[in-house]
Image (cartoon, rainbow, N blue to C red; front, side):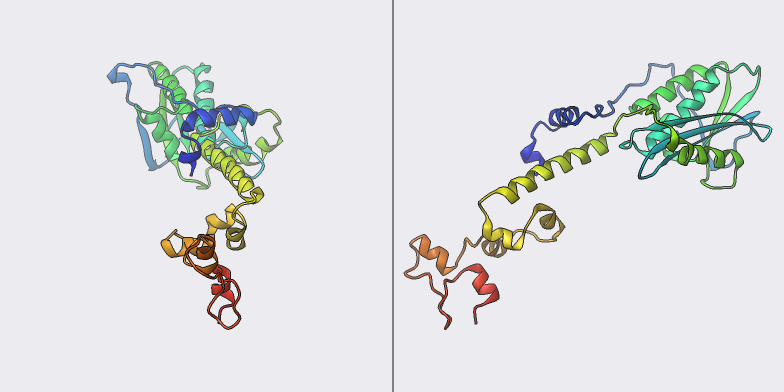
Length: 287
């Protein structure tokens, strides 16, 4: 249906989003050219906590009312720094997790702890693997990857995936910031809409147009007896066939229709009541 209504899909997508006063969808980004020996980022996916002088915990969260990102720095089991960001409501948890890691890397780039080591502990394995992937084109993952590659030469950084709600103090604090504290922030720091969400918005937009056109049309009154609106049609596991199409449109081997096409001498049914033979009559009344 969308392919028929919208042949130039992405041009229509961008135009619709602009008309809806929304920020354009995230655009793919190429990572910077890097020598192969510096291009490898190791991710520990065993679920164990990273061993370092400073632990940085990140967590993203999405509710019905907000999308939040929280980052917490722990030293000797004490919280020494935290940052919170709020994202647009159309953003995803995956984006929030990438924002978290970017916050951690940005904070690291301004630290002067001498020979200290750092561990970034994230609950999102998908976000970490996206950053580690040298072919990634997600703008937030590329941004974090480029920063990490630049920092690797001067700073000891390890990236770890940790299990959700494993009782880690820093992890719980980051979760609290993302779920609760971010809801009180009024400034939206990131509004880039994931492409999958953009497609969903465009699909919903054209379905509303389709439904409005269908309901307001003076045509298809017989069909509307069975299918009153488009959402109802989409909820049916009904595939079109030669027989069902005739009954849904009243255009078929019915005397009333054949009479109108000058293919039958009378529109009346053969049953004793002798009403016009329509699809509805055959389904609901004909004896």
